Image (cartoon, rainbow, N blue to C red; front, side):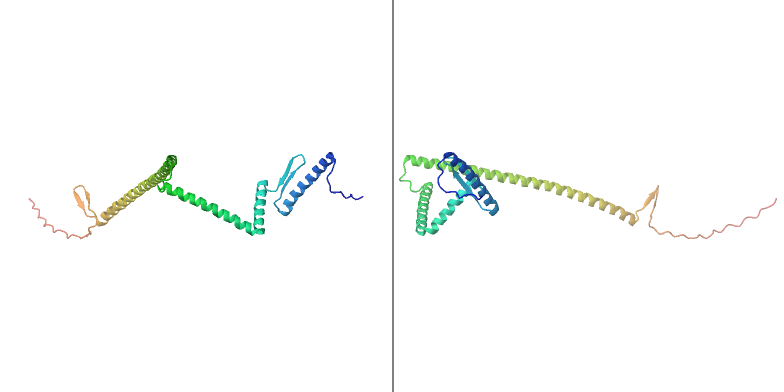
Length: 228
């Protein structure tokens, strides 16, 4: 048996009305969540009951949904009503002109111009403002100078460290070169044939050696022996 058609009108019975509200509210919140998930839509739902109870659902956040709604509503309103948009921009231009004029007057006063119409209190306020500005400028200046000094000290330390390393390398190269020169001198001395002395005699190790056979010396004739 099919479900009968429900007449859409206010329910007089408060109990039935509250039960129907709870059921329809839960179903509406469920449909809103399903719509945001299935269709990747940004959904915001706000419900107030007859007893001023709040029920809401937002796919992202209620604040972003409301902000987006107000923005789109303004855009739609401007597109539908061009004259109102022109008036809006005219008001914006007038407001910006007033702000610019006020800033220009303040700037001239800070430069010491157009001070004739100011009272003692206004001049004191202007003086305090200048002193505070100078104090802030000095603090910022000191910070910048301190940072530059720290950077220079860091660079000086790095340069000093590099100089020490270069000095060590130079000394090492000098020692290696000195050892090589000393070794070459010893080899050259050996090649030049330095004379080696043994006791009181000196011999030239590189002098040529010549061997010759000497002639036998003549012997004197033997004397005849006399017999007694």
